[in-house]
Image (cartoon, rainbow over the protein chains, first blue to last red):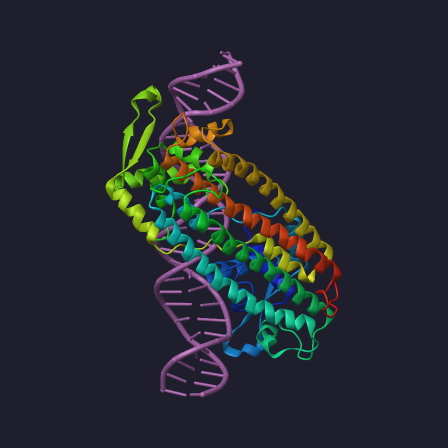
Length: 217
Length: 217
DNA sequence: TCAGACATGTAAGTCGTTACATGATTCA
DNA sequence: TGAATCATGTAACGACTTACATGTCTGA
């Protein structure tokens, strides 16, 4: 498997977590990981077949699924080893292609208004994103602080296949890691909003506080 | 031109800024935009040919380059219009595929030590990155506050083709936008370091401050 | 009964990188 | 003279998305 392909390991990691079908994987990523990961069917199904070929996962047809022929994949011991080896590999930093920053930089020869518009739109989108993350955060924080299973967690519970009454210690730990991952999204989104708030007045003034003058075109 | 292709517009934007060769573009991106954008030769040269075909740029051979046949590209009025139209298009947010967060999330069923290791490595890399950005920041802030052309700016000056004695108001504005773009990299990198510092003690304690216990595997 | 979720897949295309290939010029 | 930089390109591959195609089951 080529060193840079992340999809096989992402899927393998999910399968180490629990056996799933391609459809389950897609749902899991959409519901739970949507703010830091994505997978499309066009990647998932070919990758799943590849994992079976390579002996890293096994396929069996869920007998309960009848004619739907739901295919459930399970990580093999070799698959687990491959996944754990990948965890120890150096991690690629996210790709450095930020369209907004590029646009903003390139407005430096346009009217100032263009940069201001770009920035405000960006700030508003980050704020929306932030609000969504904070709603999830509140639910998770409640679950982590209170015994039992809060109602808001039912959806998550179904997705993550937890048991019905309360959380086992291991599930508590999973929930905690989930919460901590979410915090990263929140802190970064907040930093982006803070950036706009710092930068907007400077751009509009055309100069740094206490600096010499710049001149908007 | 397909709506999602950003390379043609990135290059067009650079050409609106000043006429350049493919090699110049590569250098410019590496020196100045490296923390939020990248382009490879495999994209640049085919795209440049495409822009000429589409009437968005013109090519001429720099007579001063002799047998090297340096090909300088200039944005046409149609090219400028296309670029400015793109600036007004909705901006794609950066791809949501953050390998580190994925790995961190997937360690939730591994030993806690694995997550801790991942986090510390990430923090150290962010700190290095941050230091590099802060060095550039110091140079730019000095240039923006002081008249004349500080020595540290000479390299940048060459890259951006500024005149020798001091900065014109327009160049001052370009420098300001450059500085403001850089601030975004700094604030986000700081947020990432802050995330690790917030999260590490919680992960090691296995629970939220004042929360009920989680249980590390 | 029919919309919506469940379920699996493929084909084509886009976007992008890496490695390779070639040759000129400058300067120590 | 030979290393570094200037300069332009291509071929092959890799990673990923989108649109399409197909069919099943559940529940209002």
